[in-house]
Image (tube, rainbow, N blue to C red; front, side, top):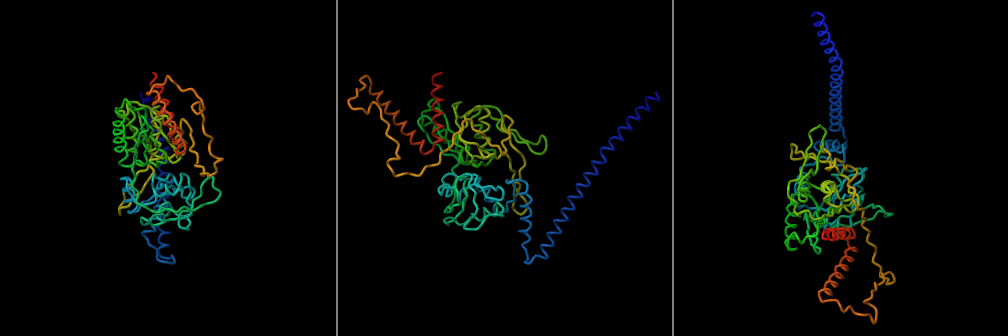
Length: 444
């Protein structure tokens, strides 16, 4: 009995000794880490006081603090940053769908200002700004060394005023200037149009109006077609869509799914992420979908494209998307400013992160650059001839008036499709896929 007690005590003492041996270094390491942090904060305070007291001109201490905060956040990743009160107000205005500016989404890459995408029908879009362009100068002033916020401030100005940006573009041997007239940007989140029995939903951004616009546009277009039974399919055009609100991306995806995960987020702490699932109800009753993406499709656009692709609910067509797979949380601060901090990564239903990778389309379709218009008639495409053009041909005596009208209708559609290929090759390709799927489904 005594032996048993002694053995037990020995085990307890041994365990306590082992725990102490493990815990002591951990506590010492934590104390060292805290000491180091306080020393570094003291260093910051020392530098701040030296600048405040010994700099050649009396500095604006508020701006010094702002710059220090912004520098700290920007050292983390390109999407974290400090928003002064004015910028915070602008951000809240943009999510409501109306703001002033050029109409471009920009980021910072290796010290340069890079265009993520120009927004549809904005001054930047009309001036010819393209995704991937690098802006090096504004009105002759170099942007090198400026923060993203400082560069954006330079591009702001009164509505109606002119700005000259210098652009470096892949494939162009020299930088070139673009003149843009600033305007009030009123973003229509979703534009809807009908092509034969197909609906095209052009989603330009994910703001508070996106899902309501999409839902209402779909309902109206389906009604114009005479009901859901007459709908062949939908093109969801997310090209050059820089993203926006995560909640709106979830709602748009949910519009076409009956069940299953849409997206999940994972942060620093295990179990702190979120998971968003679809609710029952597909607005188009399972009709085929083609999603269009390109290098200007980012963030919320990639959530939608990735989810519909993983669920095999849509065919994704175009080129690889931008690859912004991180989630930013806006945290208001004292003084009416805020910080935008990257707090998690998002994952598609199959568990893949697209951070820095993007969504790969199921069918890669490049958008050809528009060739310059040539006046030389020799460059024109030769006319297509058929039996109907031959002199002395035999007419088709068995063709009824209905069949003749059908043939003329098919010819008209073919001519419109050919014209669309010249204007927007990727969209024409997407419509061709939908027509093929519709024809295939009708034969079943």
